[in-house]
Image (cartoon, rainbow, N blue to C red; front, side, top):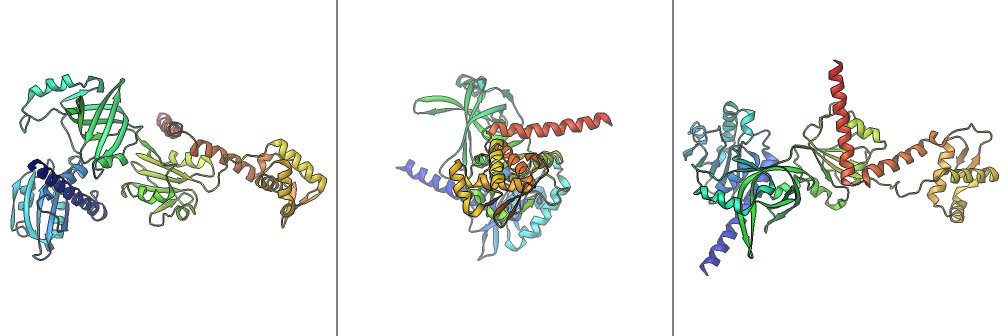
Length: 480
């Protein structure tokens, strides 16, 4: 009975922590982005003061910035908070410089507690950010974890973990050994937990597998493709469940060293806004080849760069690039990535209004028959007789309209208000000289390569473009 009550209270506390953490993350993302704030200070009315220290730790884990989370009492006008820091920023010393607005505070270099007037929060934020600029370098904002050993998935076993446990007890002076798995494949990755805020991963290497659990890392499902190779830091433990005993890695950090391709080609249009919102606004770059795509996809709330505009100043290095639609010519996409630095992520949506790939292109025999038919008739009323002719030949109405437009562009016929007139003694021309014919042929190839290709074929296409850009750069260096 007591155990059940304790379990219920623990679940209630976890729910409160998750709720406040989500709210705090939203405040950070929308109001105080880490790129502009060396120290994060967030506050909310009615936030449970008993758990804000945990929330502050979560924000440090996520953004690696000195962080203060406060609960505001609107009636008293006071804010009570907990602070957590990073290496190189002595929280107690830095807070001590603002005693004039901090009547009550205490702590040590890595953590502190404080009570202050809510009206002074902006002033404290400005001071601490300036102080951080003076004592921290750019390198200090990159978390460093000491690794005790590098292991392969096939080297991790229950027996090995039991041997490592003989080094216990673990604590501050004898920390649990940190293990690094390098460049391993994922055989599964999903969110778990009642709030889907935890991560369940399966690692595979050399035909061996290993489970991994990342508490509060569920958001990484949106950050990593299942095809990526990852390097992972964590501690090893033994998982005993229903009589099964297995080794597992308690994940602390994950990195992907290569650029990633996220295949969103099958995403439902009504979910697009929601999915785009999961991409960091700081890094998100939405690109469209066609001006109407933004409206068609209902993306009025987003900034979309139209690629017919001047993109000479466009920077995509380490950005998350979303390709909303397909180009009219492959060369447009090739040139885009030839002239910019490689993004860290590419999301392909490749929306298209018309489907050319599954619309049969007329062959030369069909063109030949149709032109002979027109020569014999001299005139042809498309509005009246196209459907009848299409049915007779087993063609579609599109086929007749398409061939008619091609003949018009080549000067073989003239179309006036839906009536075709055959021109006498036209110049001899190839079908490829028609812009419509070339565009249709190119569009079918584009759809084959970008819309209906496999994930691996699509990634290989981009990889080849990046490699050619790199080769061109090396050739220039050698020439110089």
